[in-house]
Image (cartoon, rainbow, N blue to C red; front, side):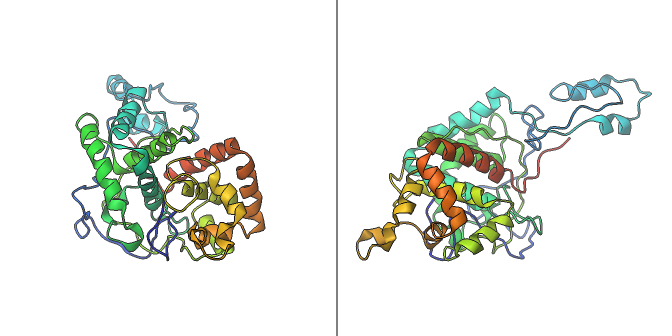
Length: 329
């Protein structure tokens, strides 16, 4: 997840005040992000806390056969009452459908392409803003590829497009789901934790607003505030920053997902005069180790890779669920 620019943090993308219709904004590649509504067997709603079944009303089976149950209920029960009893919740995708996406992604993904694919996740989901409820994991990145902060990401979209064509022929998948799963696969392919994400994201029909990516020049205090506006704690900021272990910023092997990022942060190689060591990391990376609160987590993750993997996994799932509009009945 490296950035070729010096003024935008590569972890998260940007948002301003753009409001555009699908007719006014078309993707800058041949990859339209249509709002997909998969069949009910793939629908996954809000993933973390499914509500309990209704305490009253008709007994319904929610899922693939749920609509059949509705059709066979006595006509004495008003349709509005029936639909009111349906609870929208997140179920895990069926193994067959989830594996289809994973298998097709693996066919086009390599360790050398992993950093770019993971960067797609952050640049799509990172536009989320809690205050104005804009942005998030919605596939809008396909409309935003000409933005300076997204330089180089067109290649990663083209990689995933090859897999998406094959998947769509069997079961349509949104760009939001595609990128979320592909990022998780990139992490695992490079030796990181196995992460399963929910399916059912609806794609945006246009770009997200600009101006919400944290700049690479931000100090730790400003970084923490920026991430707080996206719903992330300092601990989650530090955990997600560990994604910089992949790519060309000098934190260990560019194709190994491990805790080398934190070990190298503690060494502060950029402080040594001269040499290539001064090129390691971004100013925002350097800022983290100068902040006491961030430093506490950096030390923990440098000492315990398993802790880093677990915390990163949880933060990643939260990231790819940020601002999501889920399929609903």
